Length: 184
Image 1 (cartoon, rainbow, N blue to C red):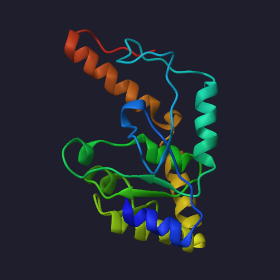
Image 2 (spheres, rainbow, N blue to C red):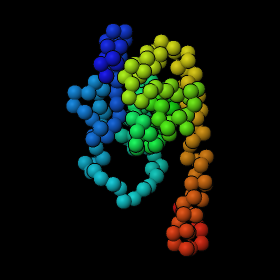
Image 3 (cartoon, rainbow, N blue to C red):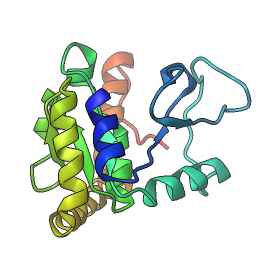
Image 4 (tube, helix red, strand yellow):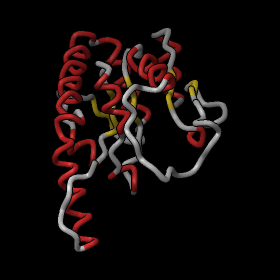
């Protein structure tokens, strides 16, 4: 983070916000953390449901994301981080924000250089180069943001819900031996 701090202090009046969950906050972090506890509960949820209207907290987070000049999704390229898809990338894309992403196996599979700006995982120097690029290349940053936004629109639930329900139905019928039915 030293090189990133030097870049911000030397050339730009930059501020950063991270939207994260409480366990990911590090004391003394250069990044200001914005968190919100879900009614003080932790752990896993026993039910999954879809909200018709965004919650007030989701609306606040969406406004924060949309106000960013660039989104940064740093991940390690080892173990789980290399294989886990981060929805943060799509959240930035959906808000029209260009994204700088660690080049992990999963991100390299789903995204193209025309949709995101990649950096080498674990390299503060490369991340600093990409952040500098984002502030200096506004036209290219806008093109990447537009391409990312188009990609996010193609991934909307309404376009894929039938396929997902079909998969769940097939898996459910395999496990129970029952005839497939529509999940509703």
